[in-house]
Length: 373
Image (tube, rainbow, N blue to C red):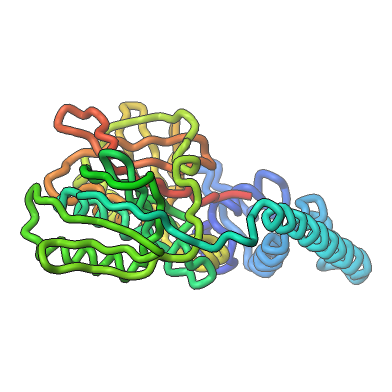
């Protein structure tokens, strides 16, 4: 007999998926402990679970999955072949429809764009507080993408305002935004994407600029960005791409907010239970997940899937969570506001001042990982 954890490990189905398929009557355990409710699976059920995992990856409807499993061990395999062929035709039809829809979107995009206009960053310059810009880059750099298929996300967005500079990075699964004070703005408001290596060179320049409240001069013209600190500078070409509208991405539905102690949460995440993500999650790589829950007393706990369900529960990539905590809590910050929204909405981490009021100078969003079908 295999426990539910062993069955999850050996079959490729997560614990939550096994619970789901038990409740749906698709893969019912051979034995359930009457006292604890713990599930046990017989030796012959492993092959059935592995088959179920393969069918699950294809997106086969649950009703068809149930029929395939019921007919699998029979002598007549015609029903299984018929169901597989029908599902393959559905997938091919869906792919054809998706291609047509994407072709329409591309046509709309080409119609929207002006083919006579080439990429050109407006000329603008401003003075930015050196220590604040260094802290802002530290708060967002971890979220920049390394995916060669999305080169625009491999940089840091610089968004100039009259009295501030916002920097943003995202790799689709997480986004970080930070603000640095600015003055002496010359030119229109502008957005430009600085390649990650250039952003790193700027951060290194700030380290040697003396820190403190001194200002450094940031300017961009003809697609080239320059950061000057005294007689030294870091410069490079901006990325020739448009960055996603980060303000729209940051517009979250109302959620449950609570104040957390960073050191305690970090220790709980590092030492707490983890769940191995299913293959295919997070860009095709199985990663360790932490299951977070806001308890009845308003604290954030790292829980195990076997625990009873709490008021609010969400699964996030464990390493991404630690990155966000480390970046936002740099320096002397001891507390953050954590905001849980809908189960499919990002979880937000925001800086607060000594009185617990939200500062608004930096925040991070993490996309949740769905645990069940």
